[in-house]
Image: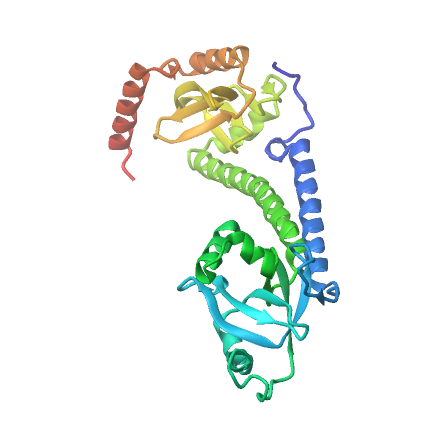
Length: 342
């Protein structure tokens, strides 16, 4: 697993994102842009003209309804304006179930008065207003709604749908933004993936700067840079890890550590539904912090080689995950913090 030394690679280049990482960022950025452009098109494209409401229209059709008569509510769910149904008649005496919010219903009071007059004894002498046009979408009357309407009319659900049709008219709704929903969903998804990669890059950069500041404080940073350029450095490119004479360079986390910083080295298996999806090599530092030395490509040979090298430079390092090592490590961290107060 160890690879040959590349004398042309600098320390900063070692911590730069890999080629696959950069390619995925470009792919996600392109897909995100495509989703945004698609959503923008859906928001700005001309809307198709509505078709006349009829019982034959399928659900999800953008339609118009010329209202001649409008009842008071026939089905009302308190506190939910999307669930207030009314009867409406068009100029050709076709009856439909319509959904209106309260403010729109209040604007149509003349048609409610006309509805009352239509069923009165003086219906022939009443001066009916001109029909008003509403636009909306056809929506399927659910079985539960049909049952509630049937209770109101003292009929069966089948009687209700046979008379009014299987679809109600949802006033104010349109299909203009329905296509945009899928683009927005895609934009959110690809933005999330792109953001994860950007945040990973940012975390690696911050950790590298912290490592530089810490080692520089102890006069070790120049040694870390010089040793990385030597031809005897051990490189594990698949795991993005390098070991020099005195330092460990963890590309996946952006950390540069001296061997004496590592107090505990162990393997962690990441599982999904009981299946191992990644094997990670983790270092517990003497100050109690945790650093990932390898995030995925930590096989047995790799772990054994790294552990052997760490023990050779730091014989006091704990190797392996066990309850005894957990207790020992916690005790050492406690002692370290007592001896190195902030």
